[in-house]
Length: 306
Image (cartoon, rainbow, N blue to C red; front, top):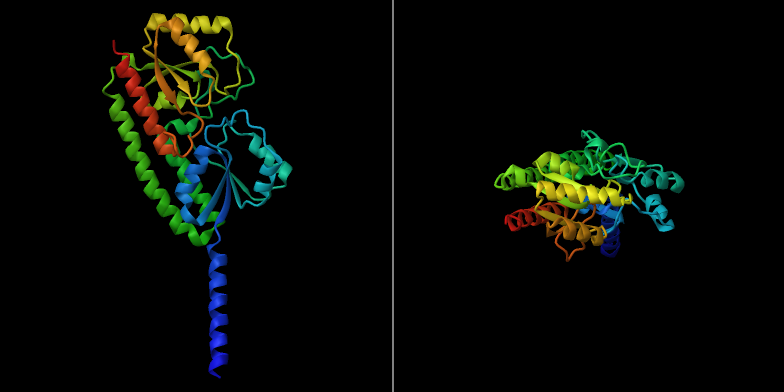
């Protein structure tokens, strides 16, 4: 009898462990690019397994989905996209893959900036009507995080309290980061807060933190600047005495180097706009990316003082 009871107890324990393992299986989430993947991981924690289609140091503007990406969507419970024309290829991929789950547009609810506020030197008329780089304003990312938490809670109701607690914690970190950026730039005279970057990815950053960004290439990073456009930009930099130009992690640095040489501005370093760095780089998370850009911009402003 004791043997039978022992067998029954062992069977019950095995069943309980199996059931627990089933409950603990992480939610499969696919994010379009690395910054979104990091946000989902922050909110989801150990309850989610995040697959990022466009990884670190890669350009999501020009991404061409692969057959393996369709298979990843097929295994997902939730797909997260930025929206605003940045990663419209995700919607096409979801349709072709037969994906039936929810496709969350993380930027839902933010107030987008119009393309008219971006580079006057861009000549690509196929660019989106709005600037899609909304994550460059930290306050917008608080909205992203809230949208992600709601979507995860809907997909996994038993984890709703965890998702909302993680979102609250992370949103507090973001609010502190936003305040740090504002206070740091306040030390730089407003007339000196002018920089040049490779492509026009910093409209929201400039709008939020009162920095004037000029760029030779438009929002999508696919436009080819004309010779006359570059010449006009260089004249403007000389006239306004813009102190520093920056290279972006996903852009060809040769254009910025040419502008630097012909305008007399100093080279201020590398900014991260549309992608995180790898784990060993300076921007492996969203918060690290924004802190790196803040340090790099400040060093450029201070170094260009003379």
